[in-house]
Length: 257
Ligand code: NAD
Ligand code: 0WE
Image (cartoon, rainbow, N blue to C red; front, side, top):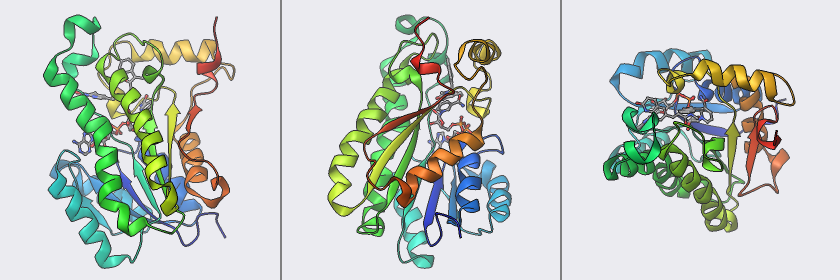
């Protein structure tokens, strides 16, 4: 029996078979969890339904995390099939494309800041709030995805770095708020991975090459490796871990030279 047997997970942020959310879904399914998925818009519906099927799931719902109505609808729908929820995976980030290139100060705007923080950080609170009563008192776990740009100035990551710093603080505040209800909240700071969110990022290839040359493990991380850590963090194996950000980056963040 897998270490997530009898656990029910909602996965937010699946877009393709390269998505980090897909690595997480597969690891959680392998360990016995029952899964439900959201998709951002009609364009992604069919693809997400197909991937859900591969995980023996027919629970798929639309959800733009910028909409409280859509978020409420997700948990209403979920409540009709499930009497409780053990795991929420938040694997979502967005900033307007113009903000993710060139000099930070020149290319950042009030509106870009607002969007990046709302979609990439506030959305975690919004999901935690809406899912709260379904998760209460069941040793639940909320997982989100961050990146080193939260802690260091990474060229071109720009306002997303600020939004990820907010997300990481959000993990700590949510962990503090939900701890008494038995719900844990943690983040995974993943190394760079070629996903849709990385497509179109200038020089992504050279970032991957740099990591391969310089990380302690001399390679890049995979979505399956991130998935395994997410499965651990959402299981009772990590029952005393909360408010933590774990680097899953082949050691990149520890090097100084
Ligand atoms: P991805 O493109 O596969 O996933 C991003 C997801 O965000 C998509 O499913 C997209 O639909 C969703 N999304 C964006 N705006 C949304 C909105 N308004 N409402 C609902 N969903 C929305 O890319 P990914 O790399 O798997 O990204 C997942 C998470 O991992 C993100 O938080 C990202 O910052 C983080 N991350 C990625 C990397 C990387 O190098 N790929 C590294 C570290 C952390
Ligand atoms: O968090 C991310 C990227 C998230 C992201 C991606 C896009 C592309 C499409 C947010 N918003 C958008 N908006 C779009 O219009 N990563 C961790 C991947 C990433 O992006 C970078 C990186 C890395 C790593 C951008 C610059 C430098 C490094």
